[in-house]
Image (cartoon, rainbow, N blue to C red; front, side, top):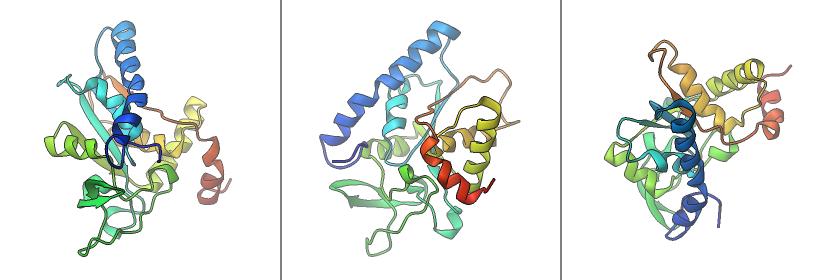
Length: 206
């Protein structure tokens, strides 16, 4: 059993149950502290547990855009990525029907992401439903964007974001100049980057 919203029932439901407080608390805090709901809620998506946790509380708030950010790795065109919802096809993996990175014969593709936590060839079934219904928008960012954002956030905020979380941050950076100044965005900063310092050092030697 792995800690994401993947696999056969009831495992996605069990994991989701323990992730939902993220979204409930974020929604309540927005209303209490800011007096309104956010315009955008964004989170990284690998298997999809942290994003389901925060998205779930906002699903019925139709004016809130939900944006899931997948790992674009070395670029979608290279095939070296883990952007399952963008580039995958319907298949069966770990006992569940979902989108899957696979070849014409159903053999699972190797995935590539600078973030080990997002390096997964499938995705939770609920994300597939949210994609197909159009309720959640899914996009991707590449490894170099993630590294740039990791450095930016560390220098400007003094917080080491996990490389997983840095995908969502990188998406927001890519929206600079495209959103009105008053846009309220909630980013699920789902982990600390202490564990990733060695990986960053390999790619960006000091």
